[in-house]
Image (cartoon, rainbow, N blue to C red; front, side, top):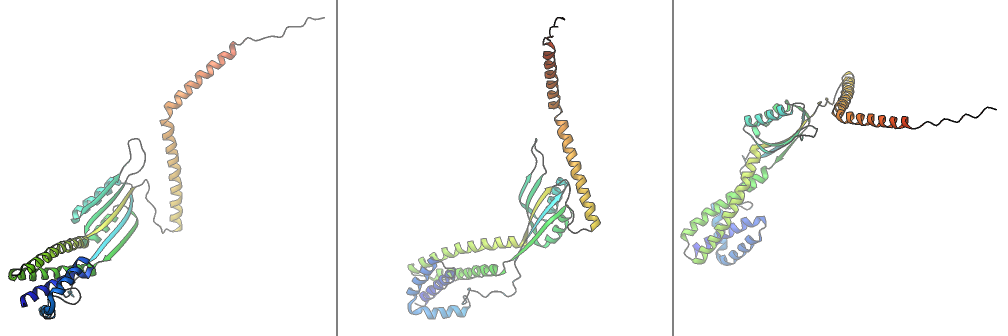
Length: 303
């Protein structure tokens, strides 16, 4: 009876610990185990508490020396006149730091189209090399905007790890009890609970691996745009701003003349055809006009 009480108590402890997340399945299991434990429940629970396997809140004591788990994300908007050089420089720096490219999209111009190229990159950089990477990449082009965010997941990480350790402790005890169990009903219940524990352990381990990756590798989002002229700094002196404005005006005038020259030269074949057609039409019209008979008024006889 003492052994059976132990089995029921351990099963009930596991069901209650897993039931903290609100799963109805575990709640039903806990209720059924409670009924079967009967008069041995209090005694068995005292034994478990003395062994320190389960605590009142999360199943284990939360370590006080856990380091902060921070997920860092940096977003850069950049422009450059040397698109290919900057893009290659970014990719080379990613490789140098031991990071990797998560997503990459590069848009160019079509054969007949006109326009500048652009690229959108999502990079994963080792957290301890993030600052060096950002400094180097920022020097490759003109950074028009930059944003940083930090997500502290320490509590979520510790909570997940605590649940995992509690399940591992419960699993070890159940395996020990499985070797000692003689009642078929107890064996079935232990096996059922072990299956639930294995599934939950896989879920928690997957979550912890995701957390570890997000903490170890920071995320850097880069939007790179090819431009003909880079943007001027926001803060300028009067003389610098006046010079910048005049330079911009002259640049736009030059671009307008350039566009007109390109359009005119590209349209020369059409202009030549239209001019030739107009010349022929004018010649034909003039010939028709000249061939018309000229009527002279009859002279009236003199009296």
